[in-house]
Length: 363
Image (cartoon, rainbow, N blue to C red; front, side):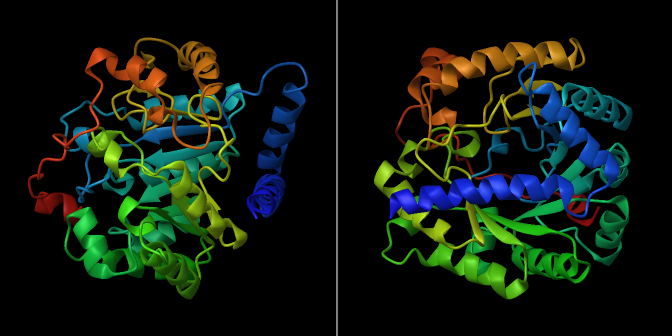
């Protein structure tokens, strides 16, 4: 069974890549993909995705958030002009996609104009959102801007459990309403969720099965399943991480083409710093939002120079890792945290957050 699942996963991934850039995309997008493939004949490919941390502002305070320690930070966010410049540089490097991350990106008023800009440049744009702000006006604006896909977080099919994990009453109801609007407008929509240690310990994994069933009922394009990562609010939470046996239990869900896993096989490499790079709201470059190791600041050094330095180091570490986030591996955790790497004991980083300001919920 595992070998069959791995084969199905690899085949699905290859087909998805070919469809992504040629099905219902502009001639410019198709050309960018062909140009990237031609470049790979003479040099390495470079990152395919630029992830932009739009803001540390968010209405939620999720128990598992990879950005949790930074939420609410008073930082000088990159301007729309600076973000456009990063999009252009990454495009020259061969990137084909722009991913808008948070916090909650829709709390910034220039998020939709940035999506429109990326679309005009032939790049596919993705939006991560908690769904709270997906009202009629915004969903129509996202459609008009040319958004490629929305990734919306649903932690459980039960409203009370979802709201509990997000520490915001009522957010489940708003997220579901947002999904229904996206589906009605035929905007690609993927539910992002994670396989919790508690749920995997149950015989039938009811939380994960419930989210998958919910996605099918709502008519979304699929469900993307992540494994817990010892970073952010869970930096000290090694006891929340899945064992190899538990990860393989979750991988059984891949037999359903509706479900995609971040690490479909135990040999699947971490993509951070190789296939993707992440720029924080204040301009710091790291391999991905889950890896709090800073390789440089785009306000002080060109993006391409930092990316090259990061690529070389990540290649070294990724040879040692597979099947889950590189933050789970001792050698890289020592690089990130030094001798003060969070221990495998209680969660001192899991302090009860202050209530979210009303202005953030209504912006």
